[in-house]
Every structure is written in C-alpha cells, then in structure tokens.
Image (cartoon, rainbow, N blue to C red):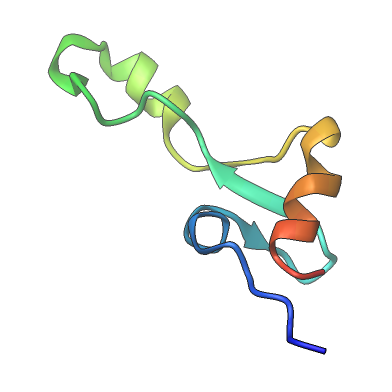
Amino acid sequence: MPKNKTHSGAKKRIRITGSGKLQRQRANAYHKAEAKTSRHKRRLAGVTDVAKSDVKNLKRMLGR
C-alpha cells in the first residue's frame, strides 16, 4: 500500500506546536501594507491558533 503524502501547501503554512496545536499566520498582513496603519499591522503580526472547525481537516492534510 502506498504512503500517504503530506499536502505541500499546508506544510508551508501551518506549524504544529509541541502540545499538538496548529498555528498559522494572520491574513492580510503584507499586501498593500503601506495603506494600513501601524496599529493594524501590529495586530496582524505574529501567529494565531487555527480555528477549531479547521483542525481536523488540516491535521489530515499534514498526515497526523
């Protein structure tokens, strides 16, 4: 039986923490950044947890 393949797009975008949680970058941080306020860009910086409803699908994409 062939091995399962990890989804290339997901592995580039999602990080798994030591406790098994999934983390992602926030959307809208870079495109047209000069038009956004510093406050808005700071809020978009850093990582956040993946929505609970998406965790099951993403874990399957990552082969977990």
